[in-house]
Image 1 (cartoon, rainbow, N blue to C red):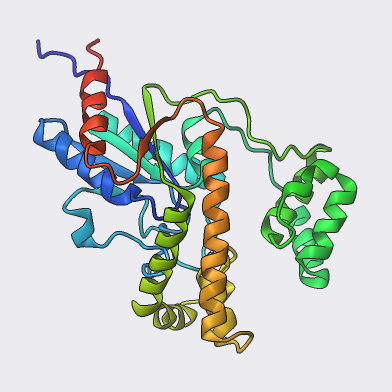
Image 2 (cartoon, rainbow, N blue to C red; image 1 turned 120 degrees about the horizontal axis):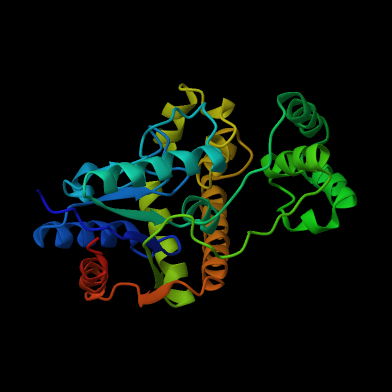
Length: 314
């Protein structure tokens, strides 16, 4: 009778924008493969799911993936809406499928919300299309800031939602109407997926800020504006989530004459830096993460060794 295969860990690789997560994940996968343990990457970035959104998301190219399979990349059109609940289901299915084939899943993401929705006990309130449509109509009528003020009056705890995020405000009002409560805080730190090994990349703020500026410069030089122009023809403006992504929203504003190219670029840098700090803040609350210094050449070996040591023989 053949031996039962070992129970495989799930690697969670966390870190802010421009910390080097994508390349490190590939390094780890290749080291594991060299040791006889196949590994594949499960994307946990909500914008990498969109086909054609390559430059502005810093999506790893085929060359940068170096032959390592990536799941949940280029699976949606820009007109489709990516929800956390849908992402949770897709990612958990990819994790199960990988492990079923004897492959270690390496989950890579910059959003604590998406990482925790995938890996932790994380339930979503129900939805009602009519209720949501009514609040979306209200959003179109009064704008995100006024709708946020209405939400804050109904549920002061929900004020932590950014006033400019109309989509989240609509969802909060929908939940509030359906359940009578809106709880904006993440649930307790309890894994729903077994065998998680969670790692994080940290780097000094000034280094992170400089890398973000360099990345945005590279995006601008790498035809981000042309990419957005092309995506407009594919329905980018009609997309509820894609058109609001950092980088794409600012280029759309530039193309609409609402700002100069320089102002759009600076706004992308500013918003990306703010988002990266929020990322780090959320990740820092998770005591399960083992932190590594971004860029340390020993990181891939450290993670790979942890995976090989964590395989459990049943």
